Image 1 (tube, helix red, strand yellow):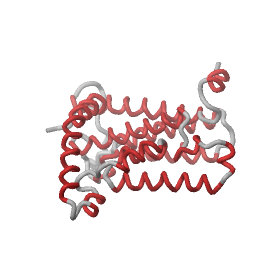
Image 2 (tube, rainbow, N blue to C red):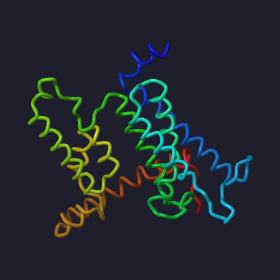
Image 3 (cartoon, rainbow, N blue to C red):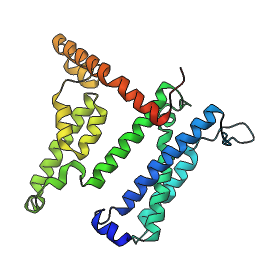
Image 4 (tube, rainbow, N blue to C red):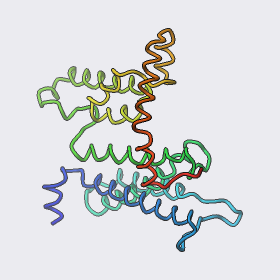
Length: 246
């Protein structure tokens, strides 16, 4: 059964990635369930702290498990039980770490604040990228090249360089999510690169400094985009990670 699943459902060599992704998502949802119960004062779960009153966040065991699973997976010379166990450990560790991504970013306990939404965004974006890889997308669109094009190193380097430029421009224009996805899907990076920059982005501050019309158009487009999608995005984040404190 496992042989059939590996041969017909998952591409060769991608089974550990599927196991790691599954462990990652299950750990994140389990962690959010426990933290929401602790926050509501229900169930047997409580925050872990040392005798001196230091609150031990779950990012701490997450880092340890990520290191053990990552280094163990690199050292494993087989695709059997060792690779599977390392994939599970790495997925669990990554789920614990990214669940508190906002705390690492801000160096403060912002878990149930508005800034804490960044943890949910990081988890969703990571899961989406891994699903794209499992679906057959290769970084920078290399999978779209024919065998003849793969042999042509100049064409390959040019393809990678052009897409890297699109990704870099998208980052400078403040379109971080599209830029990250564009690493795997070149059309997304191109789409983000040719559109107007978001207000306050490095590109907007430099390129639109003496172009008031472009600044106004960019601000109006960002306003309509945020008005249309921000509320829906926040509801989705609240369903997954819980509603932040007022």
